[in-house]
Length: 85
Image (cartoon, rainbow, N blue to C red; front, top):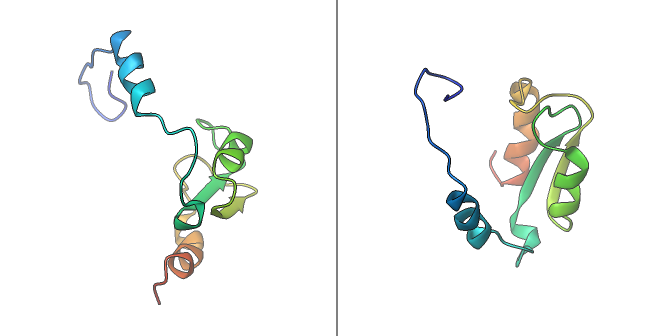
């Protein structure tokens, strides 16, 4: 079931192969990426994210969550990282 509605989705094992085929094993230009990783992310492992984006610009949050519920506080850092005033 879709998280934000009652819509049902079908996920079949063949999709795993498709996803694997799209996977990138390394970043070709890590300096082009900006990672926002939350230590208390309940979906993604923070250490895995930090390691995966090694060499990229990173904002490592010692709290927060997967939804980045405190994004208003983070926004100035994101804007700085992407060159916005």
